[in-house]
Image 1 (cartoon, helix red, strand yellow):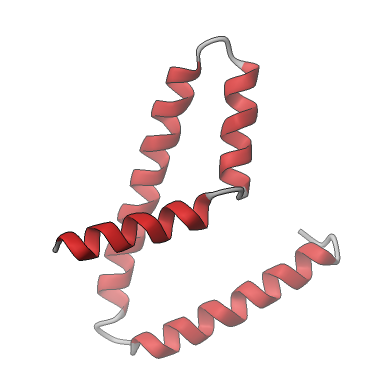
Image 2 (cartoon, rainbow, N blue to C red; image 1 turned 90 degrees about the horizontal axis):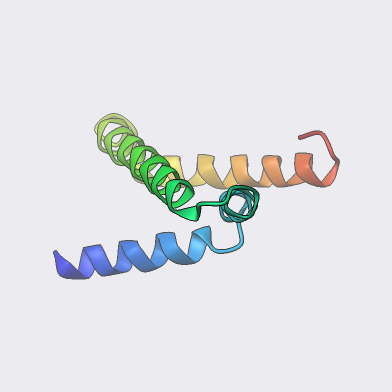
Amino acid sequence: MARIIISTFWLVFIAELGDKTQLETMLLSAKHSSPFPVFIGACLALICSSLLGVFAGTYITKYIPPHFIQNAAGILFIIMGALILLNKI
């Protein structure tokens, strides 16, 4: 169990570095005089979104094989990246 926790921590930690969420929290903490509420809000948001992901993943994989989900996620990331490059998002 510890191995799963550690690998999940590092995967999420590395994936979140430099993304829009981190940049937004940096801007919010610079904007407000007290960074602690921004930290608490960001932590709660990450906890809630992770909880949704865990429950959705547990439910969806009962009906759809994981490799289909991985392929669909890859295709969606490519589409979203192309839309961002074309300034459509």
